[in-house]
Length: 277
Figure 1 (spheres, rainbow, N blue to C red):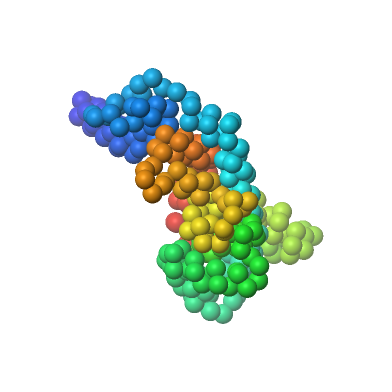
Figure 2: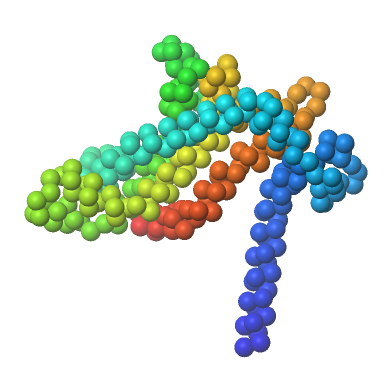
């Protein structure tokens, strides 16, 4: 009994230690955002903020409206990437899981291969193609670019959920009076809700955190996302760390909220999807 308690206490201590190590950069980011510029380069650095101030937040989000525009652009791109990924991935994953299609293995290998390609390799070819069809400097082009990584991930993640469903669900629904479309929307989709939520969260993050495609496909501030707004604080002669961290903290806030509120679905969805293929 004593050994079990010590073992549980040791495991808890290790878990807390690991959590502190992983969360410390987040704390340091938030701490730097409220640190006066005169204290940023103090040696040794202060662990706790000294004379904290909200000046960086006021300068970037109240006095300067550009960051609000960047945030709005990021929301449009992230939501557009999420919705379009779901719209295309759901029927594709269903077809690969439930229908008799030749060449499924080849399709899955192609999807996995696209996932392994780094964005920097595709940025310039995309720019050359998009510039010829007027898809640069607009939201549609950025959403399509982010879709390159989001869509294969969504299909690969959703397919095991459809595979896990009993084979006779559609036939039973059609016997009860449903057609193929209503059996899919009213019977199949509700059963794969955890997978849909998991894919929605990660596809949103693909669009929210994109930097390479946004840097390559945009030249003006009208459609640039928040990731490029962060880049403006990095100059040739130095970095405005307090301003950079203030904007980064606000940029990370939606991500933290999403994962905290939906962690049950995301973790459960990823686990279920990995075990049911």
